[in-house]
Amino acid sequence: MRRLIRASLAITAFVTILLLLAFAGLSPGSLLEASLLAMTPLALAAVGESLNEKGGVSNIGIDGIFLVTATVAVFGAEEFGNGYAGVVVGVITGALLGFIHGLLSTYARANQIVAGIGLNIFAYGFVPYFLMAAWGFPGIRVPPKEVLIPLRIISFANISFRVSEFSVLAIALAVSLHFLLYRTPLGLRIRACGESPEAVDVAGVGVYRLRVILSTIGGALAGLGGGFMSLAWFGGVVKEISAGRGFIALACVVASGLEPILSLGFAFIFGFSEALAYAIAVTPGIKEVVPYHLVLSIPYIVTLAIVSIFIGKRRFPRALGQPYIKD
Image (cartoon, rainbow, N blue to C red; front, side):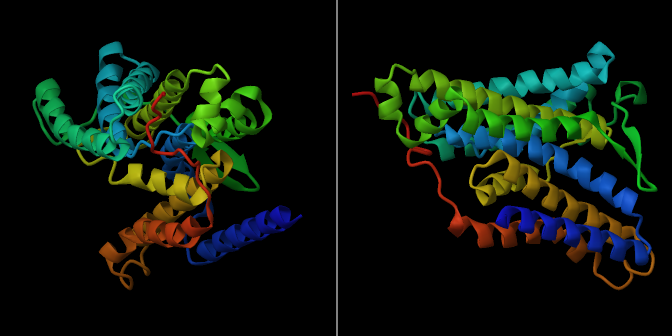
């Protein structure tokens, strides 16, 4: 009942905000569209990382995966002449990076934080180099419109907005993975792998293998988010395309306590705050009053506020971030 009341209050608050923004001259449909687009990569990465951390492995290299996969997705789309093929290239690349991180975190017993930082540093250097090597320009690449993934128009309650099938996929994945974690024997093994890997090992489950698989899945979903950003959202890639969104996705994971559906909810909050920031920044009558750079910092301020509020109330797996060493 309490959850239902909270959900009702949240929906009421959101609708109220939309009405106020409509009164102020901002289109609710455009704002909802922008919110869903900004939410999607965050939700995909956060849901995958929630699953990964439930198994005991932490990957803070999501921002780097976003960067690399957004870039190679554009390259793949141009090579194959199809945007969806480019997204598949991004997913495979993200899975490979997640697989490598999983190997380092399990079999090599590397410090997971250091490994994630290394992944980010690699991406920050690799992307400008790849842009220069592939297209002769280190800063930006805009692919032909034919390979971009179109958005679908939806009309609801006299509000029209565009939506991507990847946004729907992100929502479906959050619900599905929640069911997997709490309603299936595999989900029990995953959660036990993060809480007590010794017990899972004694039960005959390969802790290393399971953690590597989860890390690979997390990387693949982050890669899907990267491909979505460049081919379905922005319509191109720049060397700063992630803009710290990988860390915002991590904030969704932390604030939710590794719960996929809650991660999706926080991703929407951050997506809405980003959409609101850009809407305010370009709306006549408002942009003249509010400083431009302060407005664009809204998503990051919201990130700090939410993490500060919720992190102290969350419980994380006992073995999270700790390499398992067999006796």
